[in-house]
Length: 187
Image 1 (cartoon, helix red, strand yellow):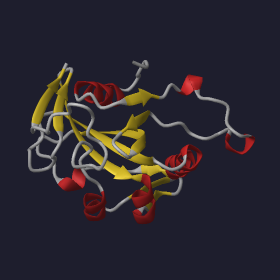
Image 2: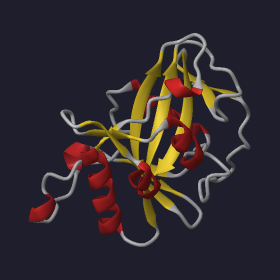
Image 3: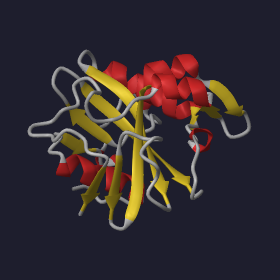
């Protein structure tokens, strides 16, 4: 397991391990040498291997502090550089690989089942997951803050283009992955 600084990445990695989804954690310090034109290419967090589909995943941790979260409280902003870097990585990896953002929402309290299909507890913290392929995100994104170089997808549109991470997300069922139950404790 690669040393993870952010609890969102640690929780997601534990989630993958528990479900036996094959993956490789990317250690940015050991990133291979890139062509000169891409030396500043931002790294991603995981390569996840699926049945006919492999994902290059960038984790985006977001906090939901409200005791009564609503769909509009699910922030999905990223930087324009995140989008461009992941699209470049897709090209470098080639056919059979797609880039995706996995939004890992940290919740102070167990979120209502109706808001997420995937909710799990990890090390005393609740998390919920939403996944969106970078190509779909790029087509739908709007500027959020030109000063910070951030973009986002409007809430309703994000809801329609994002999906749960685990099945039925195509190709994401790992060996012996259980069908999702609403709440799974991850050690």
